[in-house]
Image 1 (cartoon, rainbow, N blue to C red):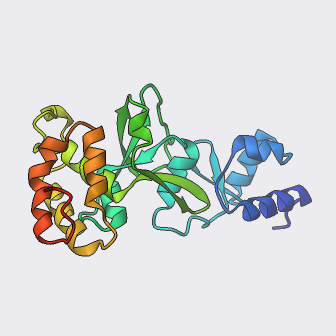
Image 2: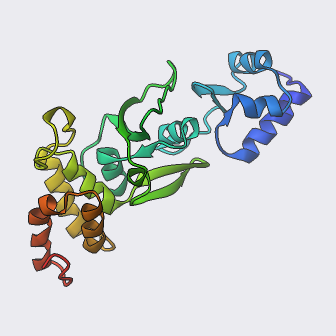
Length: 225
């Protein structure tokens, strides 16, 4: 198929961006919404999620769907078992992506998006900045809780945390304990000092301490003495 010159220009700019683009981006490139629909219909570009467009087969990473979520909602933070899986803190393969959003913010990915989402709502601004790292995935900045913050959150959302409502529990005790063990044995740069600081900020230090203090016998630091 011979493409119109304007289409070729759009494809070149999308290729240079190396990331999903929005309908607004495409309009700024000089194409109308009707033209965008035609390009999708003819397979020139894809519409992998509501309001997002990409070149066919451009999402090469296994975390391509995560990039789409972050492109759609930059305030989304990947957390809990999804973050644990990303860092190799668990052998569990979550069947859904857990993300946290600011209170009052919603997220819709459209009917074409197949990955199931588990959405948390965090009211405190601190929750969205404390121990949150940014990773570049498929050209998109994806916010993911750090390994230390992830461990604390796994405890917070487990039944081991006595202050957590039963209806809010998302992590089994075994999953938390597995991640704790893998942090100690498989992650050389993991900092239990950071775990202490984060747990204190989130008000769960006394709860998590009995589980983490045993690591002083396996590591040289005495953080939990």
